Length: 329
Image 1 (tube, rainbow, N blue to C red):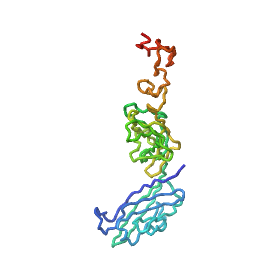
Image 2: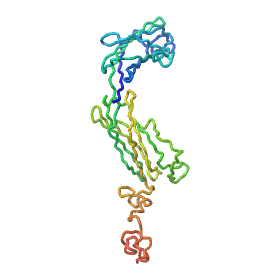
Image 3: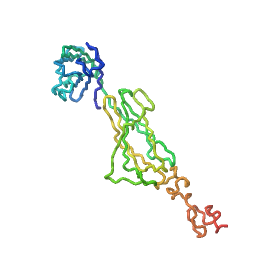
Image 4: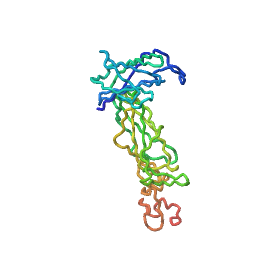
């Protein structure tokens, strides 16, 4: 089981008001507070973003629990003790936290001196175990038939479980690899249906709009997300071939999971030379070029050669196709 930590904090008080417009202000204040816990190293990272940090002369931070003071921390902006970039206004520290307990309250009191100011701020840090979301099921068609003249949608459903609750899911997005899908030149009037060469492959692509939306809640920890992807019809040069999908589910802590196995959907279209009885193109009038194997799509080509040309069991004038033919009058 992967063990991650969700940090919840609460501001107690400031000893001064935060200025609304402080671009030229000399007032020091903490703009944001961030902390993160590493289970692997039993260490905690604390970061204070301070406005007008160049006026700060000292920071004293007391870290404690309900039993009392644990340590006095050297939160700094000097690139020391876990601070990453010196003199950037992000005062931070990384230190060991032994005997950690989930659900336990820890307290941080920060005392800041500078520019004739004394600022005291208190936070409660409650460390809860964060569970990475799980993909329970992906529902999709293995074969998808493009509409002949009308746009259609390719529907995909993903069932997701998050043991921290469904409200912990930040987003579910998908990536598409369409390298093997036929393409169409924009400068030609006909449907080209050309294929990319390997050196032209782009691999998986994504877009900020390729987000699955919550669809139905199954329980407090399980929810179904759905997407409906518009598909171009055959008559409008819709591409055909295999399309590969990946899905990434991220929680609000920033932890994410991706499906292990690729999802492959075979896109079929009128004009791809594929014909089977389940295909909507099986009807001869809809896509005769694909269904030459369907004997009902063939016609008796010669009504006087004593041969069953279309293989339907009827020869020459006995075939309805020869009705009205001069040899059959």
